[in-house]
Amino acid sequence: MYVLLRVIVKEFLQLRQDRTSLPLIFVAPVVQLVVFGFAVNTDVNRVPLLLVDQDRSAASRELASSFSAGEQFELVGAAYDAREIDRWLVDGRAQVALVIGTGFGSAMASGRSPRVQLIADGSDASATTVALGYAAGVVGEATAERLRERLALLLDETAERTGRRPRPPGQVEMRTRVWYNPDLRSQLYYVPAVLAMILMTMTMLLSAMSVVREKEIGTMEQISVTPIQPWQLLVGKLFPSAVIGLVQMLLVTALAVWGFGVPLRGSFLLLLVLTQLFLFNTLGLGLLVSTLVRTQQQAMMLTTFALMVPMIYLSGLIFPIENMPALIQAVTYAVPARYYAVILRGIFLKGSGWPELWSQGLVLAGMGLALLAISVLRFRKSLD
Image (cartoon, rainbow, N blue to C red):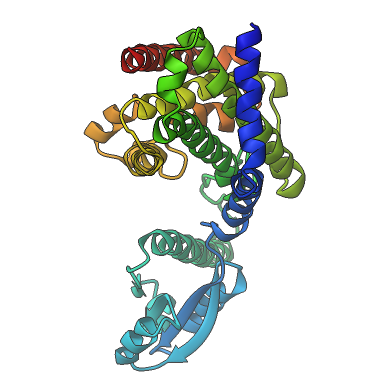
């Protein structure tokens, strides 16, 4: 135990002496959280709208006012010639164009179904998809309101002719209620993801670099001939990385809750326990990298581009796994961050407990033990 403590103290002293990396370990999480919390925002509001009203009737103006009345669209200009649409979309002044053709008002007055055209800039597919959904809702609501007015008029005419007002047909009324994120704030989706990315990045790099550093400066051969056991060396190397990961987790959680208003509805103790299981996986991957390379530069390149970037893409932290091809979805089951993403959003947003998250915790524990076992075997072989 004394030898193990000496190794742990040595690692902490090395971190303390590195006056460049040590501040970054705690400053980088704050910067990443601020960037993702404020800059990464998929909420689509005030979509720039160009109005091309070729009818110029009361009905067309009423439809146009339906678009500009809410917060979804912002009327940025009007044109009469549809050939001007391309110029507005190309220079970015408008993202969608609403074209109301001639005869719109007369068709509405006669009870026919006129057509309107919505031309959208597809270069930003995500925002355009949301904008088209907004437009469909606005047109649907305007049409429904028009039908209600016409129905009321027909009922009045029938009452005048027959002396009895018929009962209007029943209408389906859908009431929508969003749980866990009522305002659909994208921050509540992305901020917990930052915690997983920070833990994954820092702990994998630190655990890999701490072992490779000994190889690079030539002290690993000296350590191998000392009485220290391989497991003592590994635990001593990985323990500081685990502590740093835990401190970063506490820091990011505090900033997320008090800085960005992300609710922590579940058990904080359960979050700590399951985070440790996730750290087993990231530390094991970092240790595995250290057995495959000989320099810190190689460790950084392999960890960053071969592991972290694919894991972030395939974890569901940013991109929904359900939208991926079936083959890629199958690959995501081998990514530890996939299960940690479910844990984070479950505890933070849904208030999930152990009955809902035990399967994710069990998978993380199994994968972590397997990774650590493989890494330890390779490490022992490299020492021999």
